[in-house]
Length: 120
Image (cartoon, rainbow, N blue to C red; front, side, top):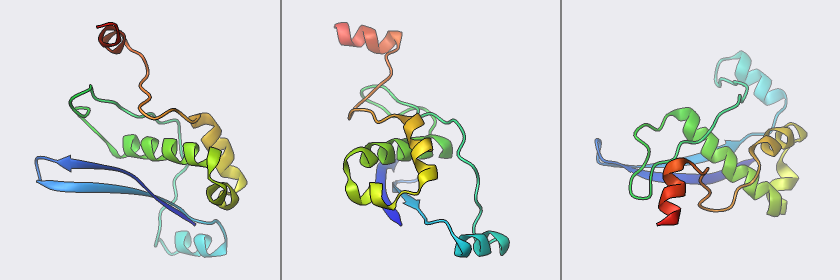
């Protein structure tokens, strides 16, 4: 099992600090039993992407799939250098994480707005 803290943010509307963790659970008979008894819901991971704000503010909307995309990017990065993470990940995870491609810290996809701010 892997449990990794992936992000935090302050929710101004509720005056709360929101912490996010990614938990990778081992597959097996126990998981099949939990799914059958509806103790846990399992959904396939589809193509999802992160959203980014600007240099001073978060994105206007952060949904559950955006949080998951960020967490998977963390896991993809960890899987490149952390032997404990690599040893625990099951083969099906490697295909998912290869599609995420590890990114350097602070990576932002260049848009016309970020290109302009980089030139200033």
